[in-house]
Structure formats: structure tokens, C-alpha cells
Amino acid sequence: MSEPASGHPVTVDIRTPGPASVTDLAALTSLAQGVADQLGAETLIVGKHFRQEGDSFVFSFAGHAPAVCDEDDTGFIYTAACKDPIR
Image (cartoon, rainbow, N blue to C red; front, side, top):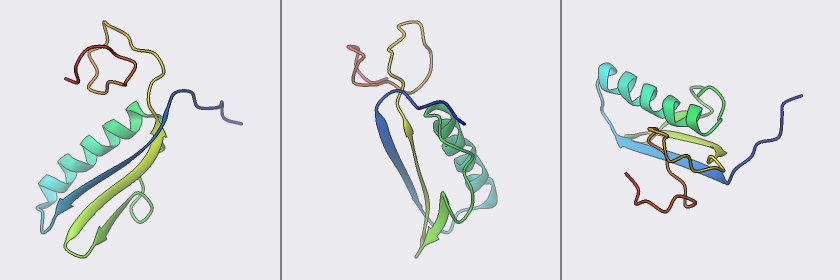
């Protein structure tokens, strides 16, 4: 059994217009998976988390934002708990 998620629940939708080259889609997939990993989401699966809608490619997944703001963290996701502006 998995441990309950902590932090604020979030849903992420990333949409990009098509057509896109295979190289661009690979880079976007890597970026989206990095965000999913930061949020504790599962591995992104084609058809479930990544799909084509009309002329657009869409990544859609859910996770939980970190509950604690670490001032020394160099990650790229910041929560409303941080007093600093979003970087």
C-alpha cells in the first residue's frame, strides 16, 4: 500500500500546438515527466496522461505540491507557502 500524499493537490495541463517534431516532443515529454516527478505523480502514459486533441498535444496529470518550503532548494517548483516571488 502506498503512503498517503502530503501537500496541496494540484492538476497540471500542458498544451502545445502541433505539428511538433519528434525532438521537440521528446524534450517536452522529459520536461513534463520532470514536473510530474516533482509533484509525486506517476509515470506519464500515452493515452492516459499524454494525448492529441485536434491540432494540440496535451499532457494532463495530478499530484501534490510540496508542503514545506525549503529556502536552500534549487528546484523549479515553488508553493504559495514560500514568501519569495516565483522564480
